[in-house]
Length: 410
Image (cartoon, rainbow, N blue to C red; front, side, top):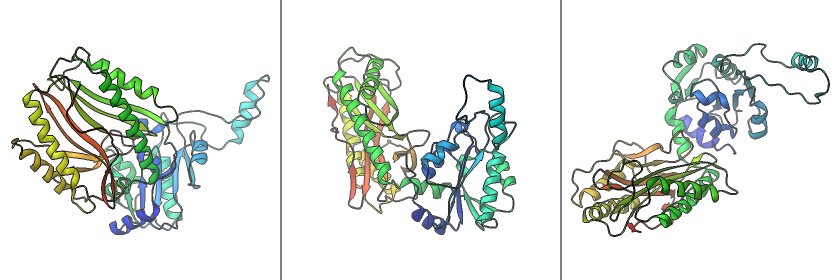
Protein backbone atom coordinates (compact mmCIF):
# COMPACT_ATOMS: atom_id res chain seq x y z
CA UNK A 1 0.00 0.00 0.00
CA UNK A 2 1.41 3.43 -0.82
CA UNK A 3 1.74 6.17 1.77
CA UNK A 4 -1.25 8.50 1.64
CA UNK A 5 -0.06 11.33 3.89
CA UNK A 6 -0.11 14.58 1.89
CA UNK A 7 3.00 16.55 2.89
CA UNK A 8 1.73 19.84 1.45
CA UNK A 9 -1.56 19.60 3.34
CA UNK A 10 0.28 18.44 6.45
CA UNK A 11 2.48 21.52 6.24
CA UNK A 12 -0.56 23.79 6.06
CA UNK A 13 -2.26 22.11 9.00
CA UNK A 14 0.90 22.18 11.10
CA UNK A 15 1.47 25.85 10.33
CA UNK A 16 -2.12 26.58 11.35
CA UNK A 17 -1.57 24.67 14.60
CA UNK A 18 1.80 26.31 15.26
CA UNK A 19 3.81 23.09 15.37
CA UNK A 20 7.13 22.22 13.74
CA UNK A 21 6.67 18.48 13.23
CA UNK A 22 4.32 15.56 13.79
CA UNK A 23 5.07 12.32 15.59
CA UNK A 24 2.68 9.51 14.66
CA UNK A 25 2.63 6.55 17.03
CA UNK A 26 -0.42 4.42 16.14
CA UNK A 27 -0.20 1.42 13.83
CA UNK A 28 -2.76 3.05 11.52
CA UNK A 29 -0.88 6.35 11.49
CA UNK A 30 2.38 4.54 10.77
CA UNK A 31 0.99 2.77 7.74
CA UNK A 32 -0.78 5.91 6.52
CA UNK A 33 2.45 7.91 6.64
CA UNK A 34 4.89 5.24 5.45
CA UNK A 35 2.96 2.81 3.25
CA UNK A 36 4.58 -0.07 5.13
CA UNK A 37 3.04 -2.49 7.63
CA UNK A 38 3.62 -1.56 11.26
CA UNK A 39 4.57 -5.07 12.30
CA UNK A 40 3.70 -7.44 15.11
CA UNK A 41 4.98 -5.28 17.97
CA UNK A 42 1.95 -3.02 17.61
CA UNK A 43 -0.46 -5.82 18.60
CA UNK A 44 -0.62 -4.57 22.19
CA UNK A 45 -1.71 -1.06 21.15
CA UNK A 46 1.09 0.44 23.27
CA UNK A 47 3.02 3.53 22.21
CA UNK A 48 6.64 3.21 21.18
CA UNK A 49 6.54 0.09 19.05
CA UNK A 50 6.80 2.24 15.90
CA UNK A 51 6.96 5.94 15.12
CA UNK A 52 7.03 8.37 12.20
CA UNK A 53 8.47 11.88 12.32
CA UNK A 54 6.98 14.28 9.76
CA UNK A 55 8.51 17.79 9.78
CA UNK A 56 6.23 20.69 8.93
CA UNK A 57 8.69 21.80 6.26
CA UNK A 58 7.69 19.59 3.32
CA UNK A 59 11.24 19.90 2.00
CA UNK A 60 12.68 18.25 5.11
CA UNK A 61 12.97 14.45 5.15
CA UNK A 62 10.72 12.21 7.20
CA UNK A 63 12.04 9.56 9.57
CA UNK A 64 10.54 6.29 10.69
CA UNK A 65 11.29 3.81 13.46
CA UNK A 66 10.35 0.19 12.83
CA UNK A 67 11.31 -3.11 14.40
CA UNK A 68 14.46 -4.77 13.14
CA UNK A 69 12.37 -7.78 12.10
CA UNK A 70 10.26 -5.67 9.75
CA UNK A 71 13.05 -3.40 8.50
CA UNK A 72 13.56 -5.27 5.18
CA UNK A 73 9.82 -5.16 4.50
CA UNK A 74 9.75 -1.47 5.33
CA UNK A 75 12.61 -0.63 2.97
CA UNK A 76 10.88 -2.48 0.15
CA UNK A 77 7.50 -0.81 0.76
CA UNK A 78 8.14 2.77 1.87
CA UNK A 79 9.38 5.96 0.24
CA UNK A 80 11.01 6.97 3.53
CA UNK A 81 14.74 6.35 3.37
CA UNK A 82 15.63 7.43 6.91
CA UNK A 83 14.68 4.25 8.77
CA UNK A 84 15.96 3.54 12.27
CA UNK A 85 15.54 0.13 13.80
CA UNK A 86 14.33 -0.91 17.22
CA UNK A 87 14.82 -4.47 18.51
CA UNK A 88 11.85 -6.64 19.42
CA UNK A 89 11.63 -10.06 21.05
CA UNK A 90 11.91 -12.05 17.83
CA UNK A 91 15.34 -13.49 17.02
CA UNK A 92 15.85 -13.74 13.28
CA UNK A 93 18.90 -13.94 11.06
CA UNK A 94 19.59 -13.34 7.40
CA UNK A 95 21.56 -16.37 6.24
CA UNK A 96 22.10 -16.19 2.51
CA UNK A 97 24.45 -18.92 1.33
CA UNK A 98 23.79 -21.07 4.37
CA UNK A 99 25.19 -24.58 3.87
CA UNK A 100 22.41 -26.85 5.04
CA UNK A 101 24.73 -29.89 5.11
CA UNK A 102 27.40 -28.26 7.28
CA UNK A 103 27.36 -27.69 11.06
CA UNK A 104 24.89 -24.93 11.94
CA UNK A 105 26.50 -23.33 15.00
CA UNK A 106 29.70 -22.00 13.37
CA UNK A 107 27.77 -20.55 10.43
CA UNK A 108 25.27 -18.83 12.69
CA UNK A 109 28.01 -17.53 14.98
CA UNK A 110 29.87 -16.00 12.03
CA UNK A 111 26.79 -14.29 10.73
CA UNK A 112 25.77 -13.11 14.18
CA UNK A 113 29.21 -11.60 14.73
CA UNK A 114 28.86 -9.62 11.51
CA UNK A 115 25.40 -8.34 12.38
CA UNK A 116 24.90 -5.15 14.32
CA UNK A 117 22.21 -5.13 16.93
CA UNK A 118 21.53 -6.27 20.47
CA UNK A 119 22.84 -9.45 21.98
CA UNK A 120 19.82 -9.51 24.30
CA UNK A 121 16.23 -8.76 23.40
CA UNK A 122 13.27 -7.24 25.27
CA UNK A 123 10.27 -9.33 26.26
CA UNK A 124 8.20 -7.46 23.65
CA UNK A 125 9.74 -4.14 22.58
CA UNK A 126 11.59 -1.31 24.27
CA UNK A 127 9.93 2.05 23.60
CA UNK A 128 13.08 3.76 24.83
CA UNK A 129 14.87 2.83 21.61
CA UNK A 130 12.10 4.42 19.55
CA UNK A 131 12.04 7.63 21.57
CA UNK A 132 15.84 7.90 21.45
CA UNK A 133 15.69 7.70 17.66
CA UNK A 134 13.04 10.43 17.64
CA UNK A 135 15.13 12.65 19.88
CA UNK A 136 18.17 12.19 17.64
CA UNK A 137 16.22 12.83 14.46
CA UNK A 138 14.68 16.01 15.86
CA UNK A 139 18.13 17.30 16.83
CA UNK A 140 19.54 16.48 13.40
CA UNK A 141 16.75 18.51 11.81
CA UNK A 142 17.25 21.49 14.11
CA UNK A 143 13.98 20.82 15.94
CA UNK A 144 15.30 19.92 19.39
CA UNK A 145 13.84 23.17 20.75
CA UNK A 146 10.77 22.99 18.56
CA UNK A 147 7.08 22.68 19.24
CA UNK A 148 6.31 19.08 18.29
CA UNK A 149 2.84 17.64 17.78
CA UNK A 150 2.35 14.11 19.10
CA UNK A 151 -0.45 11.63 18.34
CA UNK A 152 -1.36 11.50 22.02
CA UNK A 153 -4.56 9.56 21.28
CA UNK A 154 -2.22 6.59 20.75
CA UNK A 155 -0.51 7.06 24.13
CA UNK A 156 -1.93 5.54 27.31
CA UNK A 157 -1.72 7.21 30.69
CA UNK A 158 0.88 4.63 31.68
CA UNK A 159 3.01 5.35 28.61
CA UNK A 160 2.75 9.15 28.68
CA UNK A 161 5.54 9.72 31.25
CA UNK A 162 7.90 7.62 29.14
CA UNK A 163 7.31 9.86 26.12
CA UNK A 164 7.72 13.03 28.18
CA UNK A 165 10.89 11.85 29.92
CA UNK A 166 12.50 10.61 26.70
CA UNK A 167 11.78 13.90 24.92
CA UNK A 168 12.46 16.22 27.84
CA UNK A 169 13.24 19.77 26.77
CA UNK A 170 11.07 19.49 23.68
CA UNK A 171 7.69 21.20 23.76
CA UNK A 172 5.17 18.42 23.15
CA UNK A 173 1.57 19.25 22.22
CA UNK A 174 -1.38 17.06 21.34
CA UNK A 175 -1.66 16.84 17.55
CA UNK A 176 -4.33 14.15 17.46
CA UNK A 177 -6.81 16.48 15.75
CA UNK A 178 -4.22 17.57 13.15
CA UNK A 179 -3.62 13.93 12.24
CA UNK A 180 -7.35 13.20 12.18
CA UNK A 181 -7.93 16.13 9.83
CA UNK A 182 -5.18 14.83 7.56
CA UNK A 183 -6.70 11.36 7.45
CA UNK A 184 -10.26 12.63 6.97
CA UNK A 185 -9.44 13.81 3.44
CA UNK A 186 -8.93 10.76 1.29
CA UNK A 187 -6.31 10.35 -1.42
CA UNK A 188 -7.44 8.78 -4.73
CA UNK A 189 -5.94 5.44 -3.70
CA UNK A 190 -7.94 5.46 -0.49
CA UNK A 191 -11.14 6.32 -2.35
CA UNK A 192 -10.53 3.43 -4.76
CA UNK A 193 -10.14 0.97 -1.89
CA UNK A 194 -13.36 2.22 -0.30
CA UNK A 195 -15.17 1.91 -3.65
CA UNK A 196 -13.99 -1.67 -4.06
CA UNK A 197 -15.04 -2.44 -0.49
CA UNK A 198 -18.57 -1.09 -0.87
CA UNK A 199 -19.06 -2.77 -4.25
CA UNK A 200 -18.12 -6.13 -2.74
CA UNK A 201 -20.35 -5.48 0.28
CA UNK A 202 -23.35 -4.78 -1.95
CA UNK A 203 -22.73 -8.09 -3.74
CA UNK A 204 -23.01 -9.72 -0.33
CA UNK A 205 -26.18 -7.81 0.57
CA UNK A 206 -27.84 -8.89 -2.67
CA UNK A 207 -27.01 -12.51 -1.89
CA UNK A 208 -28.43 -12.14 1.63
CA UNK A 209 -31.62 -10.63 0.18
CA UNK A 210 -31.96 -13.54 -2.26
CA UNK A 211 -31.70 -16.01 0.62
CA UNK A 212 -34.36 -14.32 2.78
CA UNK A 213 -37.55 -16.30 3.39
CA UNK A 214 -39.76 -17.28 6.30
CA UNK A 215 -38.01 -19.82 8.48
CA UNK A 216 -34.40 -18.84 7.78
CA UNK A 217 -32.21 -18.00 10.76
CA UNK A 218 -30.06 -14.99 11.40
CA UNK A 219 -26.93 -17.16 11.47
CA UNK A 220 -27.84 -18.72 8.12
CA UNK A 221 -28.11 -15.26 6.56
CA UNK A 222 -24.78 -14.30 8.13
CA UNK A 223 -23.22 -17.40 6.57
CA UNK A 224 -24.58 -16.40 3.15
CA UNK A 225 -22.95 -13.01 3.63
CA UNK A 226 -19.53 -14.36 4.56
CA UNK A 227 -19.58 -17.11 1.90
CA UNK A 228 -20.52 -14.61 -0.80
CA UNK A 229 -17.77 -12.19 0.19
CA UNK A 230 -15.18 -14.97 0.14
CA UNK A 231 -16.39 -16.24 -3.24
CA UNK A 232 -16.27 -12.79 -4.87
CA UNK A 233 -13.00 -11.46 -3.43
CA UNK A 234 -10.76 -12.80 -6.18
CA UNK A 235 -8.31 -10.13 -7.28
CA UNK A 236 -9.11 -7.88 -4.32
CA UNK A 237 -6.91 -7.22 -1.30
CA UNK A 238 -9.64 -8.39 1.09
CA UNK A 239 -8.50 -8.02 4.68
CA UNK A 240 -11.72 -9.14 6.34
CA UNK A 241 -15.46 -8.50 6.48
CA UNK A 242 -17.94 -7.79 9.25
CA UNK A 243 -21.71 -7.94 9.73
CA UNK A 244 -24.41 -6.80 12.10
CA UNK A 245 -27.44 -8.68 10.79
CA UNK A 246 -30.51 -8.87 13.00
CA UNK A 247 -33.77 -10.73 12.48
CA UNK A 248 -37.16 -10.19 14.07
CA UNK A 249 -38.57 -7.97 16.76
CA UNK A 250 -35.51 -7.97 18.98
CA UNK A 251 -32.57 -6.21 17.30
CA UNK A 252 -30.30 -7.95 19.81
CA UNK A 253 -32.14 -11.26 19.67
CA UNK A 254 -29.37 -13.68 18.75
CA UNK A 255 -30.07 -16.44 16.24
CA UNK A 256 -33.73 -15.63 15.58
CA UNK A 257 -35.71 -17.29 12.79
CA UNK A 258 -37.71 -15.15 10.37
CA UNK A 259 -41.48 -15.00 10.43
CA UNK A 260 -43.92 -13.05 8.21
CA UNK A 261 -43.77 -9.34 9.05
CA UNK A 262 -40.28 -9.58 10.58
CA UNK A 263 -37.66 -6.94 9.90
CA UNK A 264 -34.17 -7.95 8.79
CA UNK A 265 -31.51 -5.30 9.40
CA UNK A 266 -28.34 -5.71 7.34
CA UNK A 267 -25.46 -3.47 8.45
CA UNK A 268 -22.24 -4.75 6.88
CA UNK A 269 -18.79 -3.86 5.61
CA UNK A 270 -15.78 -5.23 3.78
CA UNK A 271 -12.17 -4.26 4.36
CA UNK A 272 -9.99 -3.82 1.29
CA UNK A 273 -6.35 -3.38 2.26
CA UNK A 274 -7.72 -2.54 5.74
CA UNK A 275 -10.09 0.22 4.44
CA UNK A 276 -13.61 -0.57 5.60
CA UNK A 277 -16.88 0.09 3.85
CA UNK A 278 -20.12 0.63 5.78
CA UNK A 279 -23.59 0.10 4.30
CA UNK A 280 -26.99 -0.59 5.84
CA UNK A 281 -30.38 -1.61 4.46
CA UNK A 282 -33.60 -2.89 6.02
CA UNK A 283 -35.78 -5.68 4.65
CA UNK A 284 -39.15 -7.07 5.70
CA UNK A 285 -40.56 -10.57 5.26
CA UNK A 286 -43.80 -9.95 3.39
CA UNK A 287 -45.85 -6.87 4.24
CA UNK A 288 -44.47 -4.59 6.95
CA UNK A 289 -46.57 -3.96 10.05
CA UNK A 290 -48.02 -0.45 10.19
CA UNK A 291 -45.71 0.62 13.01
CA UNK A 292 -42.62 -0.55 11.07
CA UNK A 293 -43.71 1.28 7.95
CA UNK A 294 -44.24 4.51 9.90
CA UNK A 295 -40.84 4.32 11.62
CA UNK A 296 -39.11 3.57 8.35
CA UNK A 297 -40.84 6.50 6.62
CA UNK A 298 -39.54 8.83 9.34
CA UNK A 299 -36.00 7.51 9.01
CA UNK A 300 -36.21 7.88 5.23
CA UNK A 301 -37.30 11.50 5.63
CA UNK A 302 -34.31 12.13 7.88
CA UNK A 303 -31.95 10.34 5.52
CA UNK A 304 -33.08 12.31 2.48
CA UNK A 305 -32.98 15.61 4.34
CA UNK A 306 -29.53 15.02 5.79
CA UNK A 307 -27.97 13.59 2.64
CA UNK A 308 -28.95 16.71 0.72
CA UNK A 309 -27.01 18.81 3.24
CA UNK A 310 -23.67 17.04 2.77
CA UNK A 311 -22.35 19.87 0.65
CA UNK A 312 -18.95 21.57 1.01
CA UNK A 313 -18.87 24.12 3.82
CA UNK A 314 -21.93 22.81 5.65
CA UNK A 315 -21.26 22.30 9.38
CA UNK A 316 -21.66 18.66 10.37
CA UNK A 317 -23.62 19.87 13.40
CA UNK A 318 -26.16 21.43 11.05
CA UNK A 319 -26.49 18.17 9.11
CA UNK A 320 -27.24 16.47 12.44
CA UNK A 321 -29.83 19.10 13.36
CA UNK A 322 -31.65 18.92 10.04
CA UNK A 323 -31.68 15.12 10.04
CA UNK A 324 -33.06 14.99 13.56
CA UNK A 325 -35.67 17.64 12.76
CA UNK A 326 -36.91 15.71 9.71
CA UNK A 327 -37.36 12.50 11.71
CA UNK A 328 -39.13 14.27 14.56
CA UNK A 329 -41.43 16.03 12.09
CA UNK A 330 -42.94 12.62 11.30
CA UNK A 331 -44.29 12.42 14.83
CA UNK A 332 -41.32 10.94 16.67
CA UNK A 333 -40.51 13.93 18.84
CA UNK A 334 -38.37 11.93 21.27
CA UNK A 335 -35.98 10.55 18.64
CA UNK A 336 -32.40 11.28 19.64
CA UNK A 337 -29.21 9.87 18.14
CA UNK A 338 -25.66 10.92 19.00
CA UNK A 339 -24.37 10.88 15.43
CA UNK A 340 -25.69 10.18 11.95
CA UNK A 341 -22.44 8.94 10.50
CA UNK A 342 -18.72 9.14 10.43
CA UNK A 343 -15.60 9.01 8.35
CA UNK A 344 -14.22 5.73 7.03
CA UNK A 345 -10.67 4.46 6.97
CA UNK A 346 -8.33 1.99 8.64
CA UNK A 347 -9.05 2.51 12.32
CA UNK A 348 -9.52 -0.30 14.85
CA UNK A 349 -13.29 -0.14 14.26
CA UNK A 350 -15.57 0.77 11.39
CA UNK A 351 -16.16 4.35 12.58
CA UNK A 352 -13.63 7.19 12.40
CA UNK A 353 -13.63 10.89 13.27
CA UNK A 354 -15.23 13.23 12.27
CA UNK A 355 -18.75 12.36 13.33
CA UNK A 356 -21.97 13.92 12.07
CA UNK A 357 -22.97 15.03 15.56
CA UNK A 358 -24.55 18.01 17.26
CA UNK A 359 -21.28 18.99 18.93
CA UNK A 360 -19.03 18.66 15.88
CA UNK A 361 -16.93 21.70 14.98
CA UNK A 362 -16.03 20.38 11.52
CA UNK A 363 -17.56 21.22 8.15
CA UNK A 364 -18.25 19.03 5.14
CA UNK A 365 -15.08 19.12 3.04
CA UNK A 366 -14.34 17.85 -0.48
CA UNK A 367 -12.27 14.68 -0.27
CA UNK A 368 -14.12 13.25 2.72
CA UNK A 369 -15.74 9.83 2.48
CA UNK A 370 -18.53 9.56 5.05
CA UNK A 371 -20.91 6.82 6.09
CA UNK A 372 -24.25 8.62 6.44
CA UNK A 373 -26.83 6.64 8.42
CA UNK A 374 -30.24 6.81 10.02
CA UNK A 375 -30.71 3.79 12.30
CA UNK A 376 -33.17 2.94 15.05
CA UNK A 377 -33.26 -0.20 17.19
CA UNK A 378 -36.66 -0.81 18.78
CA UNK A 379 -37.01 -3.93 20.88
CA UNK A 380 -40.48 -5.31 20.18
CA UNK A 381 -40.50 -4.03 16.61
CA UNK A 382 -37.05 -4.64 15.14
CA UNK A 383 -33.87 -3.05 13.83
CA UNK A 384 -33.90 -0.32 11.17
CA UNK A 385 -31.08 1.22 9.18
CA UNK A 386 -30.55 3.26 6.02
CA UNK A 387 -26.87 3.88 5.38
CA UNK A 388 -24.81 4.94 2.38
CA UNK A 389 -21.12 5.49 1.82
CA UNK A 390 -20.81 9.02 0.46
CA UNK A 391 -17.91 10.75 -1.29
CA UNK A 392 -17.87 14.51 -0.87
CA UNK A 393 -16.97 16.33 -4.09
CA UNK A 394 -16.80 20.01 -4.99
CA UNK A 395 -20.31 19.61 -6.44
CA UNK A 396 -21.75 17.87 -3.42
CA UNK A 397 -22.34 14.33 -2.12
CA UNK A 398 -21.94 11.33 -4.42
CA UNK A 399 -23.14 8.01 -3.07
CA UNK A 400 -20.94 5.00 -3.73
CA UNK A 401 -23.95 2.71 -3.27
CA UNK A 402 -26.41 1.34 -5.83
CA UNK A 403 -28.95 -0.49 -3.69
CA UNK A 404 -32.47 0.98 -3.38
CA UNK A 405 -33.45 2.76 -0.17
CA UNK A 406 -36.99 1.41 0.22
CA UNK A 407 -38.10 -0.90 3.01
CA UNK A 408 -37.57 -3.91 0.79
CA UNK A 409 -40.17 -6.70 0.98
CA UNK A 410 -38.91 -10.26 0.43
